[in-house]
Amino acid sequence: MSLGSVAVDAAPRRGIRPLPLLTTINFFNYMDRQVVYSMTPFLAESFGLSKARLGLLSLVNLAVFALASLASGPIADRLGPRRVIFTGVLLWSIATIGSALSTSFPMLLFFRALVGVGEGAYGPSANALLCADAPPHARGRALGIYNAGMAFGASTGLFVGAVLAPIIGWRGVFWIAGTPSLLLALMAAFVAAPRRIERPHVEPARAYLLNPTFIAFLLGGILVTFGASGLLFWSRALIIDERGFSVIGGSIMMLSIGLGCGIGGVLLGGYVGDRYGHRRKGGHAFVMGASLLIAAPLSVGCLLVTHKPSFAILTAATVFMLSVYNGPVAVVVDQLAPARYAATLQAVFLFFAHVLGDAPAATVIGLIAAHATMGHSMLVTTAAFALSGSLFVYTGRRQLRERSFHAEEQPAAAAS
Image (tube, rainbow, N blue to C red; front, side, top):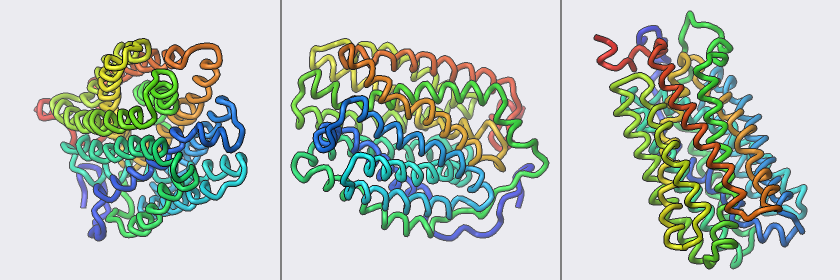
């Protein structure tokens, strides 16, 4: 069977539907990652750590995640996504349980690195599978639903870590985060997925990786990932330690904002991206850019205002606008190369976004915080959001002038 020049694996896809299963997996993926951030005081006490050393938990996990992402993309393009997804989920669930058993900080770092291997293997394959599974006009909405699992999981992780760690200890929290993923790994072995999606007669992958449009989009992804990761890692310190919210009150606020504004922003981003992207090429990138340009000044207010009600409102608005980015991002990556290289480009994007954006963010802000308030230290993230928004708008403008790699995605106006 073919779509234009796309040769698609014609074998029937039997198994568990990808979107609900991968969304559930994404929930535990981000719950497991973010739960560490709200347990930093307990980990610091157990192992005698400074803020800079605490940042290594994020640095090691995300650096290894990025390397694993880079390696897993081409493997998934050759072997198909199902095997890679299964292996990744199984590995990170075992490593999370290993984190609970850690008796020293180096041992904990090792298991957090192993978690990064599993999560890195999973991410590019999941994005590529969902882009292949969803019809072109609904890809943003599908990825929005998928990344709603991310927002839900991240918010739940921050809440669970802050509230349960004082009661059952940080080891108990790791058991809660890791055990369900063992069952999900078994289910992932039966996800409905094509063996491969081939697109013959295309340029080598490096031609698409070196395209200025992809490079501009990648730089934007690095910057927004740096900003978001820095805000997430130190959110507990800002809200509870510096703004003076109680542990319960601050945790409930983080959970409420994450669930309401985080999930709402992701879903809106996917929906609006599809609507605007259907009318003009580059629409998904324009939506991402606009949301981040709005988020930048909101985040300045969030970090400088100390009045608690105003701080809560600005935080909610900032999280909502930042979350819009997560709906369309994988769709734009998918648009920038033929389907044959879908997982490879997703992997390269995730690699650089995490190794240059995610990985250093917590440590950089932690070092600045040694000489300034947490709110002032995190202002570096607002510059990152403004620059990334500008780069995404630039990406959308370049897409308007370039040919599409997916003939079925051309807007009606372009076809006429």
